Image: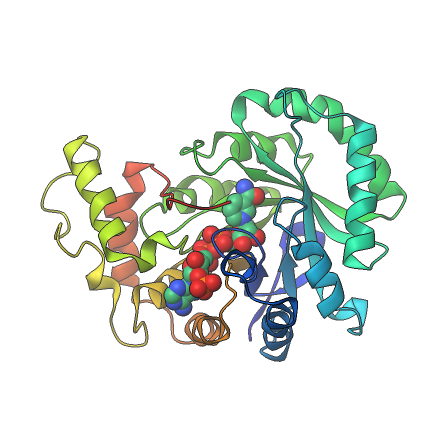
Length: 318
Ligand SMILES: NC(=O)c1ccc[n+]([C@@H]2O[C@H](COP(=O)([O-])OP(=O)(O)OC[C@H]3O[C@@H](n4cnc5c(N)ncnc54)[C@H](OP(=O)(O)O)[C@@H]3O)[C@@H](O)[C@H]2O)c1
């Protein structure tokens, strides 16, 4: 495994991190037993993974992680979880609710602190209201030692231009951002990463594969849609196999290429893989620590899909 510094946090993190959300939720979405999910976490540790991401909204994964990591020294791994800042009526939740949610997360995770505590899925138009209400409480929690660093994740489904994270990076209030970036939606590499690097903000990549990239029909559907909508010039990629050209050499599959691509972008600390499948986890580790994608492939991805600025979404995700 390779390890990197997560921006100005000073945290050392494995270049591949284990995510607990998305279409897998450590396999909970396809009914793995808790023991089977714990096996994925333990295998990740064996493979050198030290970054684990979860959220109260990801089913029972906080408790699953807490259980799987219970006998592992706390200094051996870096843990992030989140606070969803909106109530059911879409109002911004209160500071008291944040503190109670954090305390609940700490109990579930069986720890006295999380390393990065993210505001979860903040859309640009609510960014200011969320910060005004919740940043003082986040700073208080950091002062009390319950969290080490403050982070923010974007509303991946709709914030195609990463507006919320660009504001967060400029503001200086956040130590870490979690950004969506993949072969079909690589725009963050052009806009977000250079600015994060300039400000010392740590970057966690989510949705590097997003199950869409492992589904050839979904890839074709997105690409044909973008051509039809005038977002992508016809003929730039073959519409019947729009990404097959990334599979080359050490990148045996599109998902291999996807994790390699995300990890290769300057400024990235860790790339999350959201899997409940040990064979997939092993393949993803192999890919990310193996030789990088050829520079010409990376350039073509950025040139072709960078200007499209559309995030890809599977039918079922979180
Ligand atoms: N706004 C937010 O805060 C937000 C939003 C989305 C995600 N996240 C975080 O980011 C993490 C990563 O995003 P993601 O879950 O979308 O992860 P991802 O790694 O981009 O995609 C995971 C999907 O790809 C499949 N997969 C993984 N490796 C594979 C392989 N080698 N071959 C075939 N299929 C493979 C997984 O299925 P299997 O289980 O079968 O492997 C799962 O369906 C999440 O888990 C979550 O922690 C945060």
